[in-house]
Amino acid sequence: MFCRQLDITNRGLSGYNTRWILDYLPSIIVPAYHFDLAVVWLGCNDAVKPGAVQHVPQDDYSNNLTLNVAKIRECESSDLFKVFEDSAMPGSELFTDGLHLGKCGNRLVSDVVSRFLSERVQTGPAFPNWKDLILKP
Image (tube, rainbow, N blue to C red; front, side, top):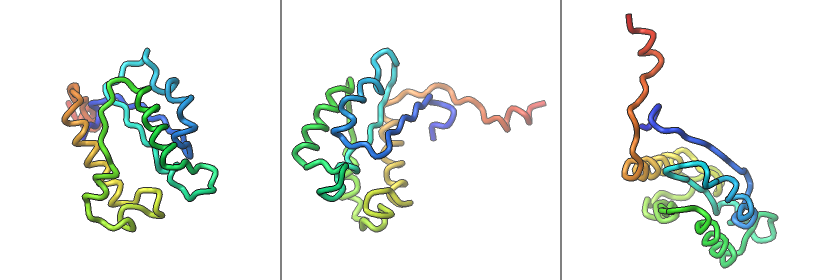
């Protein structure tokens, strides 16, 4: 949908929870770098079973999320948890293992992010597909 129209920087910190990201978020979302949108995925690792090293109790999670969001300027958000609830799809269709998104879960997230971007981000002209360039005389 936004192919060759947006510059995207993908920065992932696999396995991090909201507690561990607190100190690193300012260096990821640096004020010197202009961006129109930041997509921040937090919460899945916090929700692992109590006793697991990544687990964060719900009250701590809520506080950490508030602190993390405060570090991102002009933050708007879309609540994917509510989107999943409203979809009425069983968790087994949304997730492969209760944590990682499956085909239906990825499709749902893609639809939400695409809609979010369409409503908020101005895109520039689309650069042509390279195949169209080589077919020109």
